[in-house]
Image 1 (cartoon, helix red, strand yellow):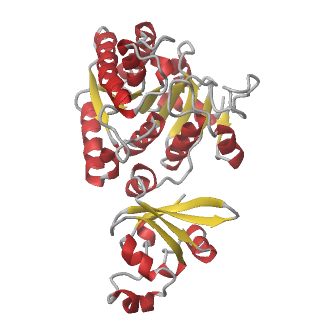
Image 2 (cartoon, one colour):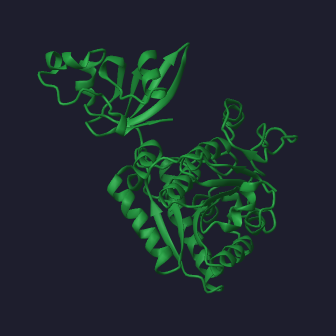
Image 3 (cartoon, helix red, strand yellow):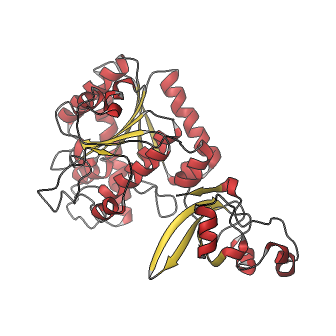
Length: 379
């Protein structure tokens, strides 16, 4: 047993993400027997004094089953309609199974707006901590798919779970889906795939193996689990990816049994505000930088100056979050994210410009930096 796994029993605040195929039957209906099995394990944790937050997929899938939608190629209105019907189905079953165990639950539906706006991001934390600390409830979170459209869409519950675990300073994130863990190759395509028991660093090979691995029911796949693991590791949160239909999977993981893949967090974690910049907010644009600027930002802890900006893409205002990227040999690499001091139009005018020459281009100089290092997070 690894040292990290042996300490999982000490985790006091736990976020558990349940994938669509974990909570629904092969036909798409909510699987009450499976939910009961999972609820028994969750309530065992809460009775031991631990706090648990659930992030549950399955609304769209169960809504499709209820509405009799058999076509996999649903457009956005059909997805929203299925989510509206399925969310009721899902939460009714959650209330039934947890109610029989005497455990209060709470429903929290989110869009990207709650994550992108820092004040709403703080309000979300306040709501969840009140439910956990004062009322000992189990919040059940999901993206509000019935109103989510491009621009306010979170995209995957893997990412939502990791951002919530980060925001709540959780000790542990369990990602339970239809895969046995993080594998050396895509298990949906390679039956001989081997589970990697422990990950201390996410490598380029792991990212490549995870590409285009979305399962038959979800929008995510191993790619989104790798991305969520990166968020968790930078936030100091231990993450375990395992098969959600393995018997007593939650209890076995908490006991330190070698189930699935454990991602070991980095010793130094990002502060809350920088975690929001890096992972919760959505980039409103891109700044393409040269090699010198990339080196100064990534390796030397420097601010990004206008002189290092080669191209400006997107329509953003001062204070918006943007991606900082490099380009070469047909490839684009995101190296950082940050809050810009200038809007897109002004920044386009002063790109490749030294700080002392900014007034000549704009008629004023509010800042020397395109992004100050205090508002910059290296990825």
